[in-house]
Amino acid sequence: MVLASQKTDYCLNLSASMSWKSAKKTTAKEAMGLMENRNALLIDVRLPMQYRKVLIKGALNANRETVQLDLDLGDKRVPIICHCYSGFSSKTACRNLEQTGYENVYNLSRGFAAWKRAGGKIEN
Image 1: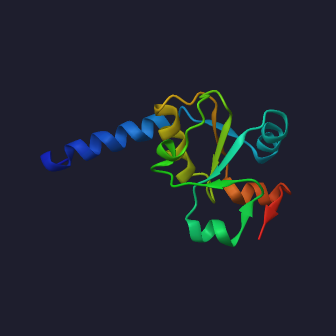
Image 2: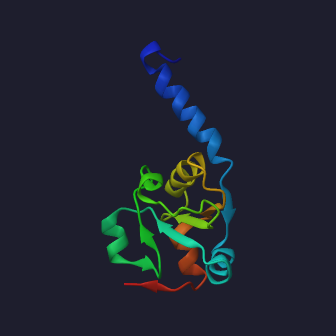
């Protein structure tokens, strides 16, 4: 049951979850290839405290809710890979970037943990 006062939030949440399906997923190995061969931009949407503790080499830190406002590349075709720790929060960042016209947005499947398991470069 949805209360009238909750109806707008419910619709927004439903709409957001539906658009998550459009985010292209990429594995850690595929992401490494995108970074090497296509100069993909890697965006870490974990909290700044988590980012400062350990990060994927070359990643920029941004808030998942406002990443589209913080990023102004000019060329909306630049490949962008978003990641968090497990792959869930980065879906929000992907959605926000796609909704503002970025065309090549990828969600790192299983996030930072998968990158680390795949032997990706990290910094402490």
